[in-house]
Every structure is written in structure tokens, then in C-alpha cells.
Length: 304
Image (cartoon, rainbow, N blue to C red; front, side, top):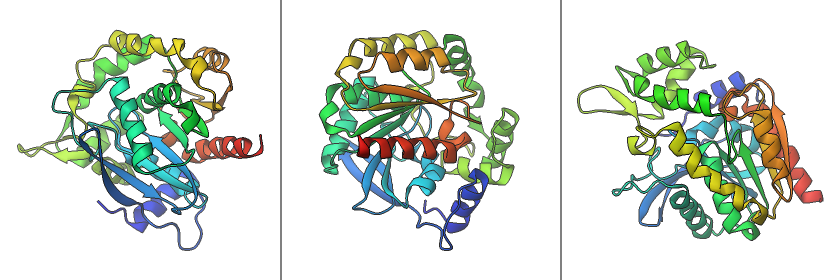
């Protein structure tokens, strides 16, 4: 689906992002084979600019970065990947969705696009996968940004989130999805929220709508299983030699100040910041605020 300039203008206005008189060109959708799967990605900005590789959270897609890319696109080549089993990327027939499976995809993606020292930005699931990749290939990165995630998070909010997933899996229409998520606290006005959700929903044969992601990536997993799979990352953080920025949503229940502080201290070059007016999904709650701290981090990398 090609994003219209009207939609881009609307999400920019909602986020308080100032565009020039022509705005910005919609992203180009491309496909690439990674580890036997046909993977989709969106590319924004100027091709020879500094690359940012963007990884969404669980159940999301590359479109979660749309507003963020409007802010960063004029200066960077923003490349947002639909991770395996998500968005318009292929599902794994055998259900291979571990952290290491995703990390292998990141490695293949960086190689396939011949990216030179990108900054890797990952939110939630994408952040965990980015940590795993960075620990194995730190020399390939200019920097790493983890958005509201680390090797540890708050158990009760994660448990509540996982238990509730099945309750909003199927919708009568994108309008129904927008209304239900608005009642849950989504911060976009209903019309814009409907357009955003339509990018992440697919039509079922029975006429209902559901998320594009493979349910095996999330549905049925317990919070304990998710937390246990990530804890081994503590043992490899010392390998991440590039600078790391941890961008915590100031209102996040899932990732606490204590989680961020402990994560930063375990890294050779780690620091954390709080992005105001944002919960767990920082890139949609306050994309302009996230862009500001990522821009500052990128400037620091250049001058260090």
C-alpha cells in the first residue's frame, strides 16, 4: 500500500513534526530474501545518507516508524524492516521466531543491502533482537538505540499485555479496530487511527479483520517464557562495543527507570534517557521526541 501525502501530512501534524512545503516523499516498498524468507522493508529519505535500520515491536510492522521517519528522513536513509512473521514479510513455515532467528535476519539484511556502519534502532521485540545482533556483530554498527526495552522488563505489565492479546485479535472492520483501541488509550484521533490500523490489518475469508502478524510469534506465549528467553542477554552485553542509547518512555509501565539504569550500567558505552509523553510504544506516542534524542545520539557518535 502506497502512503498518500495527505496521510503523511496528517500523522506529521498529529506528532507536531514540521514538514517543508512539499512534505516528504512516501517510502519505497522493497523486498529481499533473507534466510529463505521473502522480507519486506520500507525505505525513506536519501539513498546516500547515513543509514538507520528500524525494527518494530511484537505484533507491529514497519509502519510503526512512519511518523519517526518523517522527522528523520530529511537527514537519514531510514530503512524499516518488517521482521519475519510480521507486516508484509513471509511467515516461517516451521515457526522459527526466536531471538536468534531474528538476529540472523538482521545480519543478512545488513549484508544484503551492503550497509556501512548503520545505527540500529529497535523497539521492544525489535530492541531485543537488535541487542542480540549487536552482541554478535558490534563492529558492523555505528550505534545501537533500544526503545523501551532491555534484557529485563516489568513482569506484571508484560503478563497483563500477553493475557489480553487474544481479546483484541479479531475485528469487524478497521473502524471497529480503531474504536476498540481508542477505548484502550490509543492517542490518535479516530480517523487517523483507522488509517494507521488499516496498514497493519488483513482481511479474513469470513469477512473479519485481524493483525498481519503470524499469531505464533505472540499468541500463547507467557510472560515468563518471554522474560526467560531474554535474560541470557545479560551475559553478552560486554561484547557490545559501540555506543548504546536506551530511550525509555517516561510513562512506560513495561520498562522501568531501574530496568534502564541497570541495562545502561552493564554496557561498555551505555546511557539512558526518558522520552516525555510516551508509554511503551515511544515511536507512536511521541515520534518527534524520540527523533530528537536519536538525532542527539547520532550527532554524539560523529563527534566522539
